[in-house]
Length: 613
Image 1 (tube, one colour):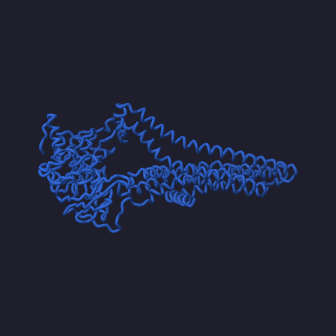
Image 2 (cartoon, one colour; image 1 turned 90 degrees about the horizontal axis):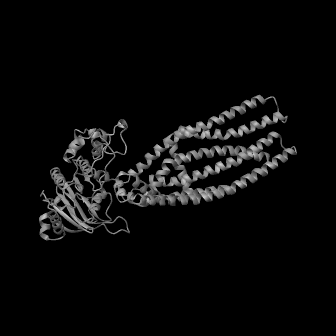
Image 3 (cartoon, rainbow, N blue to C red; image 1 turned 120 degrees about the vertical axis):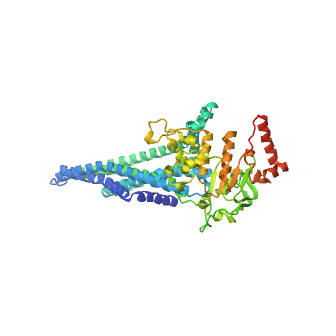
C-alpha cells in the first residue's frame, strides 16, 4: 500500500505540472457536482413540508427557484467536467510521453533494451504513463464528487437515524475490501501479461507489415501466425475473464446486501412517518439520502479502487522514469580527445548475461591510429559484439579498452560516440525523406530536414554512389522513402513515397555514415553485404579513398574486400586465432588462408572473375 500511495502522489504531480488551473478547476467542479444533489434533496424537503403544512409556505417560490437553479447547475457541471478532463488528459499525455521517452533516451547502452524483463516493464509503463495519470485524475475527481455527496447524505441519515446510518456504513465495508482486492488482482494481471501482449503485437505486426509479407505468403505462414496471435490473445482474455468472474460474484453479493439494507431503511422511514415521527419532507429526503448513500458509496469505492489499480500500474512508469543508468557515467569524465595513438584492447572478456556463454574471450590487440584493421571470422565469432564495445554500448566484464591510453569507461559515452562513424550490419531504414535519412547521420550540420541536399548530404550520397538515384526520385531528396504513409502536403500524389531496394538502402546507410566525415574512427560492419560483386568493388574502392589516414575497423565475410587492410584479426569463438596482414596470414596457412581459398575457389567454380581491389 505505501508503494501505491507514493505512485499515486507521483501520478497526480503530472496533471498538476501539465496544467495547474485545469487541475484545480476539475476538483472545484467535482465538489460542486457532489454538493448539488444534497442541496436539491434538502430544498425538496422544504418544498414538501411547506405544501403539507409541516413548514412555512411564505418562501415556496424562492425554494422552487433555488431548486430549479440547482437542477440547472447540476445539468451544466458534467459538461464542464468533461471539457476540463479532455483538456487535462491531452496535456498529461504530452507531458508523460515526453518524460517517459526522455528517460529511455537517457540509457547510454543497450543492455536494458535487450532485456525482456525491462521491455515488459516498458510496455506496461507506456500504457500506464499515457493513460494512468489522466485516469487517476478522473477517478480522483469522481471520488471527490461521490465523497462530497456521500458526506452530505450520510450526515442526513445520521441526523434522522444514527443507528441506520451506522448500519449502512458497516454494510459497505465488505465491498471496500472486495473492490481493492480485485484492483490488486487486475494490476498484477496486467503486469504479468505484458510479455503475452508483446508477443500478440509481434504476431499482429508480422501479419500486417510489408517486410514480412513475402515470406508469409510464399511459405503460407498466415494461418500459422494468426493462430499464434489468437493463442496469446486467448491467454490474455482468459486471465481477464477469471478476474471478471470474481468481480461479478463480489458485486452481485454486495448489491444484494445493499438492497437488503435499503429495503430495511425504507420500511423504517415509512413506519416512522406513519407514527408521526417523520414528516413527508423527512421521508423524501431520507429515501433520497438512502439511495444516494448507496450509489455514492459505490462510486467512492469503485473510483478509489480504480485509482488504486492505476497507481499500481503507474509504478512501472515510475520505475522507468526514475530508473538507474545501464552504463555508469563518471561524474567528471575525461574529455574524448582526437585519436592520436590508437585503440588498445587488453584481455577483454564479455558475455550478454551471466547465464550466457562468453561472446569475447581475452581479446588483446591494438588498432593503430590512421590505419585500417579488419575483423574476420564466422558468424557468432564476436565481431559485431566487439563493435558494440568499441561504441561503448556495453562495458567489458573483464579487461579494458583504451582510447589513447584512456579507458572508455572514463569518458562520456556521447562525447566518445561523437568521434565515431559507423555503418551497422543491421542499419536502419527510416520512414523519412531521402534527405532526412542521410542527414540524421550528423545533426550538428542542422535540423535533418534543413540540411542542404546540394551540399553535405548530396556529397555524402555521391561518395556512396546513390546521389543520382535520389536526385531522380519524384520529389528528389524530399521524397519519402516509404509507402506506409504520405506527406500531408502531397497526400493525393501517389508518387510521394517510394520504396528502395536493399542495395540502395545500404548505400543510403553508407552515405549517412560518410556524412560524419571528420570522425576519428570509422567502423564498417558488412558495408557491402547487400551489393553485387561489381557494386561491392565500387563501394570498397570509394571507401579506401575516403578512409585516407582515418582509423578504420572493417568487418566483412568477403575476404577479398579486406585484403588490403593494414592489420587483419581472425576471431574464432570470441578469441583471437590469428593476426597479421594478408600476405602473412596467407603464408601461415591457417584459418584465414583456408577461408580465403574457399571463397576464391567458389568464384572460380562459378566462372566469376574476381576483381582484385
